[in-house]
Image (cartoon, rainbow over all chains, first blue to last red; front, side):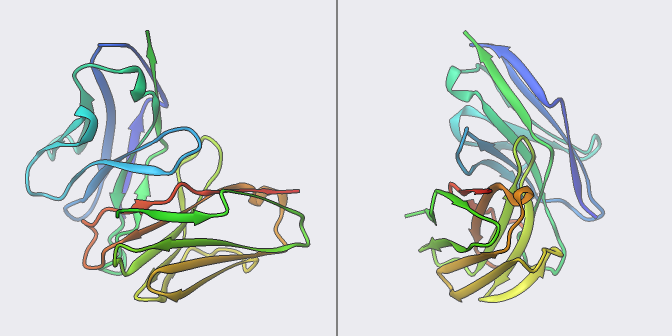
Length: 116
Length: 114
């Protein structure tokens, strides 16, 4: 069975500082991994995804993530935080039940706060 | 147009009411999903439709009844709900053909059960 664990339910950074949100996965098959962002009272928006093509994945809004099989990790980073990055971030792995469905299994989420 | 539209955005209902949540997408996706999200929690899968057929039901109580009238529409019929069913209900869609396809989410319908 697939699962993801997000370390840290709340991360606080200063504007302009590095953002690092941690995600570790567990999967018996090569995983498909995703990072989503959720702003208050909104749905989820895809930041980036890993589907085995390249281990360093670049996403929207300056975010990127690196897939490290040896560490079973898929951490999300951004070199310089903006106030607008304050949101809830979810790491997710594709549930491979049934073969073709793209159902996602989400981590518990990390709330990112950005201080001026 | 890469959008999933959910209506209504907010719904308040009593425990004896019958209401429906609606979801529509025009991206040609053949898989559609209902997720439930409680406050400060991740989304939890409720149902998956693939090619208009129910393919996954995560042991959801029968007071929630999904329906997929066609490939663009997904409904969630609600009846005799409990206050603990109050949550944000998210609809999503994706292309078929493998778990590497990302899900596109709507903005959700926030349900309050009195």
